[in-house]
Image (tube, rainbow, N blue to C red; front, side, top):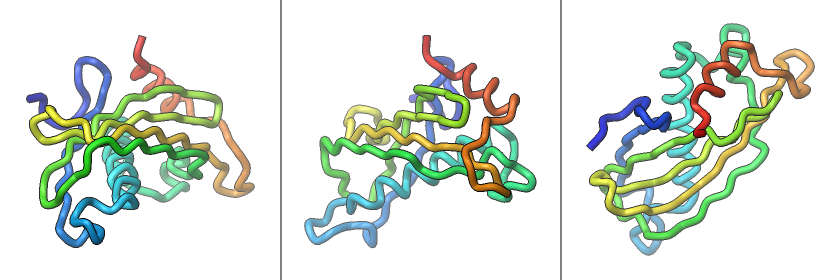
Length: 147
């Protein structure tokens, strides 16, 4: 089983624990928590790739983003408490846009719980208008695109 972090196939893995208080009335992971797991994994990914552990746009302007689109396909219910592996793949890098695909998998990688995609748009911290990624951000994320 590969460990968390950047993989040789350019994917990035983050393992997270789900908890009983994240369940809905059926005892399964509430649908809103999939988005929370994606957000947390995305931050871990950013810190690992960019080396900046901050959400301050003055220090790391590439973290000043708005979500343009999120889609989630639920396949098998997650029953907390358990570990969930999020496998992330950079799908598209555009002038001010980034799309990352996610797979929610069991700790042993045998069960695919859900697939998701998240697109963000980088914004200028002053004008709050779309702005191009930094050269560093763009280069590091383009290097992770699958062939």
